[in-house]
Length: 455
Image (cartoon, rainbow, N blue to C red; front, side):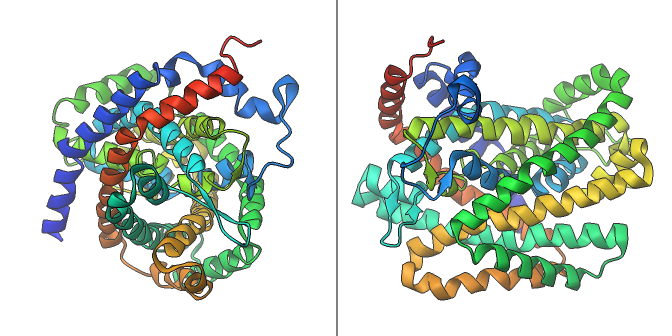
């Protein structure tokens, strides 16, 4: 365990930070600082297409989900344990400075996610049954050529491992632990209920997953956001001090404070970066397997939904968790808490016991939807590795681990998920850099058809 932890801390320290920020900066420059300079244009071509004068009819365009259903499914997969338990764990171990590195990953992750989503839609494939498949393994193989097939296969294996560790172990375990702590529900019962519910929804195919996640994502996020805003507003005088802690301890060791045992700069960087990427998946390429199924008129339009996704996931939801914990002082309590219980403690400082109940229900909904949303990634990886015919049988393996994961000690599974994430990020980021000329060409083509200064 100590050896594995050492490998992960090294991997998520300088090596991956240099890779993520370096290639993110490279893509930012190549795109003309797109994610920073054109927020109105991004809004108009994403959220704006659903209503008002910019509304677009995507009827007749091929795909399995609408763009909104695709991003809802992705958000259902990304807004989960990483946003609530993961961010809390990052602060509990890495201190306030971890939040700064989470921001860094998010700002460069916006363009990274846009590029990978654009490429996924551009290189997607349609099977005989009408379903679409896409993602890093497809744009690595088709975009870079057959000589890169081994890299695509390595990515697919790492994705398969990550799905099993995250979606079917981490998420159900987080739900089971939260419901058991707050309401006394036996963990094994929670595991069975999650497995059964995911089985029922996924039996309807990709469109069923998209519709369910589209229904759940909005209310789910709204409840949690309202709860988090309440904690922030109640402690608003503390914001300057907390911001000072975030910036100070991002570049200096955090001292022992209350139950917090202190943290080095390297630990803050590794925890902030890993939780940021684990949450919004920018650079991992995992969410692109869902975006690749969208009904969209141009790959770049779906790519811009990637920017929206990172903004909602990290800048809004993760920050609400982080500021609730830091402003309330829950992270420095006499008892050193971590994960979801630390977030619950922060909510309890303002909302009392009902706040814990609200946070618990949010955790349950977030993590259940994550397990559901990740089914698309599981399906894509399994089909790529084993083939469409084999998946007819492999699909049922997805519903066994949640029953086991709900009653497990989860620390080792988190470490395996972090390790698998590293093996996803490296080949994917390399591919994004090499395929950036294709993205730039597609972006130029889209802007010619949809001028930025268009009223």
